[in-house]
Image 1 (tube, rainbow, N blue to C red):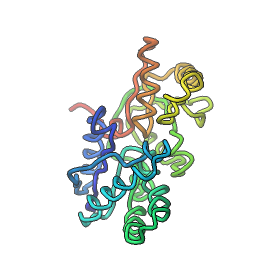
Image 2 (cartoon, one colour):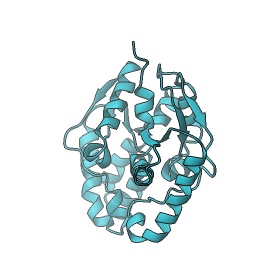
Image 3 (tube, rainbow, N blue to C red):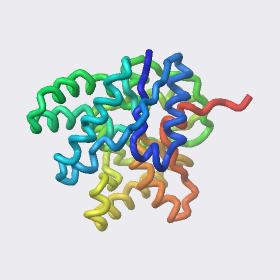
Image 4 (cartoon, helix red, strand yellow):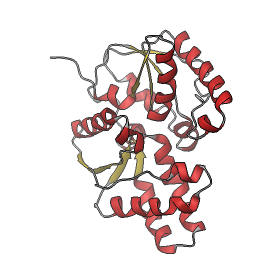
Length: 246
């Protein structure tokens, strides 16, 4: 397949290793990865803050950059950004009264996938040759869980990783408290939710907390580092890309 990499803002600015790991996994499975230049924010931050008009140029930019590449699929290591494209782009285009944009979005959005759903559900992969000898706990992000319906896809992939010891996370479906601008506008509530999530991670006995979204991992990881817990956060793409030393 010819797969377009949608890197996302956090991947581009703060977590480039996640993007590299995504490419490594896809290429290991025999796919050609294309990176359309000039990618921008998907517009989620604007739309979630009530600035839907300001998000429209970013919707158009996404369609222009990815729509002209003759791609079989578009893959991102971020459930929240994929949810924005699949669930909100059609609505934004329709509400803007832009029939041409709505048609372009309608053709493109169904081909946009979060990495784990692409690997596990679209390709049917379970063992992709990864090796990661650590105790790991998985946090399901809200967008992936509730909007994309990722379900067991990430866990099926993690169970296929050699050497891994998966630990159970209590109240796993509870939000970590990040929620994009929610963490900025509702600091006290966000901090309380984060404290509950961190306690659950520590109670699991894991060395590593993983998730499908760098945003959740940034939030959880910050608390783990500030508390000097010794527990790391690692994006699931990096775990799937890891191989046994030879």
